[in-house]
Each structure stands twice: as C-alpha cells, then as structure tokens.
Image (cartoon, rainbow, N blue to C red; front, side, top):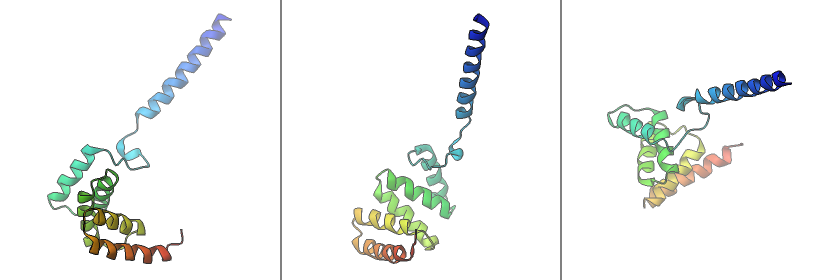
Length: 126
C-alpha cells in the first residue's frame, strides 16, 4: 500500500512539474495575442521607428499599443505613419485612427477616416 501511495505521488509530481516547465518556455513572440502593455517592447519599437526604420508592422504595433493604453496622441501619430505607408488595411484601422484623431481634436481628418471606415465596413463580409 505504501508503494502504491509513493508511486501515485511521484506521478502527480512529475505531471505537475512537466506542465509548469511547459508554461515557463513561453516567450513574448509565442503569445497568440499581442500584449499591448509590454512597455519595454513599445519603447524599443519607438526607438527603432524614430531612427528611421519604417515598417507597416511596427507602426501597427505602436498605434495599437498606444490606442489600447489610452494614449491617443501617440496612437494618432503612429497610425498616421501607418497610413502614409499604406492604405491597404483592415477597416478596424480606419476606425481606430478616426477615434484617436477625434480624441485629439482633429475632427476633420477624423470624419474623413470614419467615412472610409464605413465604406470598407459595407464591403467587409465578416
């Protein structure tokens, strides 16, 4: 009986340690969802972008991070950079850019982006 109890405890320990080890191997890039509150990553992306490296992906991440953290001034700045590079974006980016512009007082440009969002939303069949 004592042997069965010891074996049972060992099995439980091995499985629990194994599951903990699997969780410990995750990195920032392994996450399926973007972590918008990773301030170190945001600072790194900002330094890279301000040094002149332009990338649609970086501008998206910066715009989204600032948008979801409530910093609409910076969100509008980075979404503006994104829209300079491309306008071939999902409709949600037009909405977020419009919202950021509106909250920073740029109502005319906000209306323009919102109208484009509405146009794209009619075409979007999700």
